[in-house]
Image (cartoon, rainbow, N blue to C red; front, side):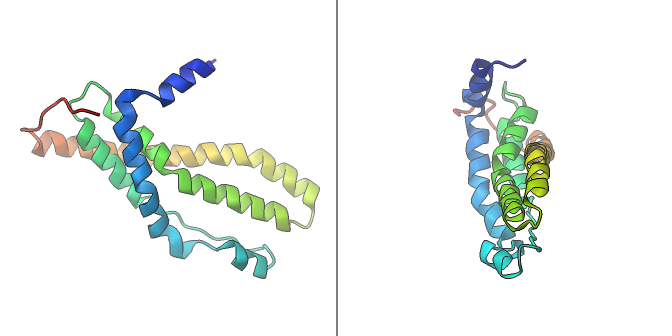
Length: 162
């Protein structure tokens, strides 16, 4: 079992600060790339809550993972950890949108008790799955970034101030 102290230490790891910042920097781009595909709350209310649509673009998370992979190549911190961190942090808009979708569905549900129970049980699962998808996209991008760094970045310094 992971203790709270271990969890906090992992989240505040100084060696992953750059990966966290790059993941945070990808959030506005994820929102901008996905904005046109999201059904906004006033549109959901006008159609009776039966249609909620959104497509989240993973391109910004992938680019963030690639940048992190390039930056962390040759460092003591593992590229996989850094890419995963950037992906999970960058997946915040996806998680927020899923939570919004669940809240809208609960609000407009015809059988409030059953749908509220089902959706409440599904929320943790979908949050974990969304973060996992973001982590996977960031990891794939980090692998590409590390490969590019190995092929192109021969003259780069291996130590960088994070």
